[in-house]
Length: 421
Image (tube, rainbow, N blue to C red; front, side):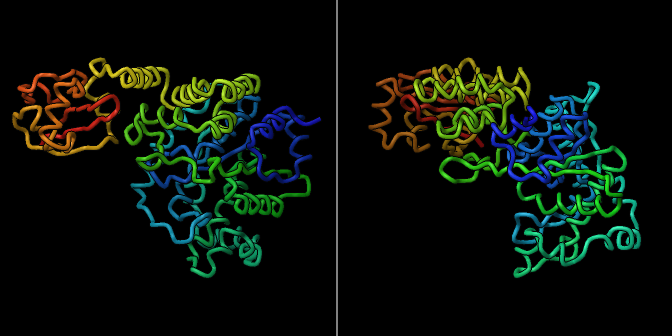
C-alpha cells in the first residue's frame, strides 16, 4: 500500500522524479527521518517560485519528519549552473550574509521550529568554508569522475557556450552537503526543483562511495510550476512576486493569488496550500458551477497571504481590496493607497495649487478642457476617494497625501497617481 504522505504528494502533482520509490516508501513507513532542501542566497528574499520544494518539505514535517533547511552561504558564492545559459555574477561575502539573514526570516514564517521535530537551519559555509583546496580535491574530487559530471544536464547544456571550473564544481559541493548532512544529522532524503536532479544524484553517488552497502539515501524532485497557457509562473505586472513585504506588498501578494485563472487555481491550491483534499475538491466544483464567485481564488489568496505575511497583513490586504472594489478610498491610509496604486498610470507634476480642470488635463486624465469640465460636472472625477463636481475646485496641499501624491479616479475603474515634486 502506498505511503499516505507519498499518496498525497502524488495527488497534489508534487512528485517529478524519485530514486528508489519502493525503498523510500519503506523508509517513511518504518521511521521518522530527517530530510533537507537547500536555498542559495542569490537575493535577500525568496520569491514564490522558490517555495514549492520548501512547502513540500513542510508537508513532511506535518507527517512527523524533521526538516533541515540549508541556506547556501558557500554554494551561493559559487553559483549553480542549473537552468542557466551563462555564468552568474559573483556576489561579495557581505551581500551573501545579508541575503542569508533575509531568507532565514522567511523560513521561520513557513516552518515550525519549536516542536519535537522542529526544523533545523544550517549554512554550508560552516563546513565547506573550512575546507582546504587539497582536502577538497583529495577527499571529494577523487570520488566523482569528470565523465559523470559531464553527463549532468546542468553541465552538458553549457559546454558549447562555456562553463567556468567554479560553476563546474558546483555539483560536487552540493554532493558534499548531502554527504555532510547524512553523516551529521542522519539526513536521508534531499528535495529539490526539477533542475536539481543532477545535483541530488551526485550527492547520492558520494554517500554510496563513502559508506558501506547499507547506506541508504534518496532524492525527490518537484515539477516546474507552469500556467495552463504554458507561460512562466510567478511573475506579475511588476516582475517577480517576492516574499519580502518591502519588495511585494502583502496587498500585491494577495492580488497575485486572487487573480489566478480558473484553469490554474485548483493546481495552485494543491501545490501551495495545506488545505485538505476534500476542501480542494469542493472548491473545484465551485470553479465549474459558480466561477463568478471566485471562491477558490479567494481561498488561495487567503491561505498564501496568511502563511507568508500573517493574519494581520491578510486582514489589511482584504480591507484594501474591499475599499477599492467599493470605491471608498477614504477608508485607506496614505501608505495603503500608495501600495494599492503602485502600478497604476502615474504622472509627475510640480507642487502648486491648480484647478481640478487644469490638473486632469495636464495629467492626461481627460483629453481636453471641454472633456474635463464634462467629467467634473457629471461626477466622474474623484480625488483621494472624494467626488469633485465643482469646476472651481482647487487641488492644493490639502489633497497631497504625505505631501507627495494624490489618487485621481475617472469613471468607475480608471485610477491615476499624480506625484508632486
